[in-house]
Image (tube, rainbow, N blue to C red; front, side, top):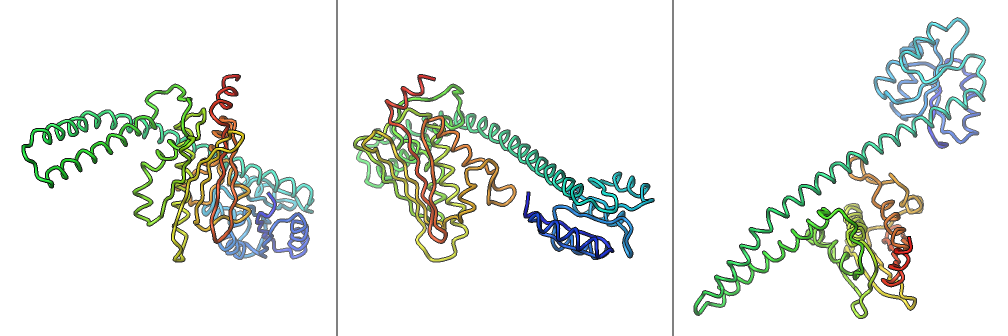
Length: 377
């Protein structure tokens, strides 16, 4: 809660200076103003987290200042400083939304406790809003899943007709030209690709709500993650490389959809990060899969999207932490990745260099070891 900004509005210089020095010692950033008008100007300029205001001041008193602050920012914490005989004004201030009041002479310990309580409540309110956003997002995702399953069901039959009749038409042609064969093959190929996407929509929407844990090649969810992303990457001129081990195949005991969600999140984060790259570098991402001598499957994901500073890297896996604009990210993707990898008895870590890029390392026990551990639980 330290490093928060606090605005002190009081016409008594001795109070402003004393409280300001004490708050600065507690690592708060402090702004002061000698009356309500200047206090309002400072509030608009600095957007403090907490305002400490005297009630009786020239030009604009504390009550009027409180009204205007609450109009501009209803959630700002305002602590009133009251003198003798100000009880009616104090009651009015509390009615208008003041968080607390402190009587003169100001007891700093009492004021400090009030500030901390207000900041804690602000954090609780922010967490509540984040949870509401998460619930809303979950509701939207559930709706999208239902819609995707319905679309998949409705499209499968027409696609089967397209593939079937195209094959019949090709077989029925006598002495077809090269162009006719070429065009029919293109129709078949396009329809088959659509059918792959539709079936993947059904799987990802989880028409089957039961657990889908099984022995699988980790390359498959990596490849599937590209199904909905590859055109997006191509449109942004982002080169993609899949250096995936095939012999032997990196087998794990896992839930394919859960792993795919991690890989899709990595891809979408890179796509968004590339939006901020302004130099002429060749944008690129790369997936690598391998098996080490102990049978552990290792997946590396690399991009050159500019990297992350240390303070972002340290908080990246925290729930609700995001550097994206409001409405563009919930801050849950990487924290969910941690939970998913934990469930798979694995580990995920990241290294990043500002100006260059980021590398994620995911390790999961090989299929036999992972399966045994999961069955024990």
